[in-house]
Length: 138
Image (cartoon, rainbow, N blue to C red; front, side):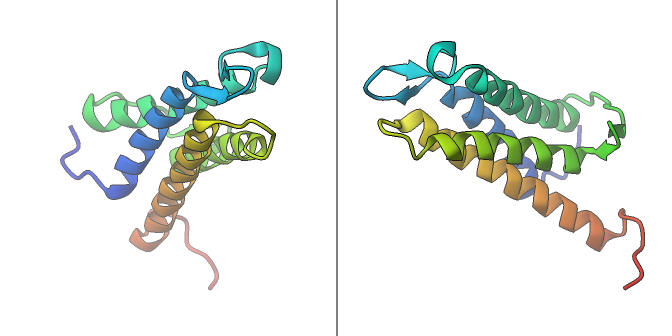
């Protein structure tokens, strides 16, 4: 178990959990749809739920359960993958925020995805400072 829990780790775990939970809450107040209803949103809510579950559970398993994950996935390291997944979830949920009848589930979802993006960005910047990143010319 990793005894050094950083604030960015808490941000990633909490953001992923809130993002996943927000898909069960009401996303549209007039039609009473949530993220799992595919009639109004297609698969957008399900994609957001998978992203939240993947980020939150993945970080929690690696930090608390000593589960080893591959160092790279599709050419991305963990921090970069979290940043990309969080940004995709942010684009989906923030775009739905501006429709008529957007409800609390969408609000929580885009805030949680923004927290994931921020936590991943903090991890990327910390890796650059600590020397884990490859050296640059400047």
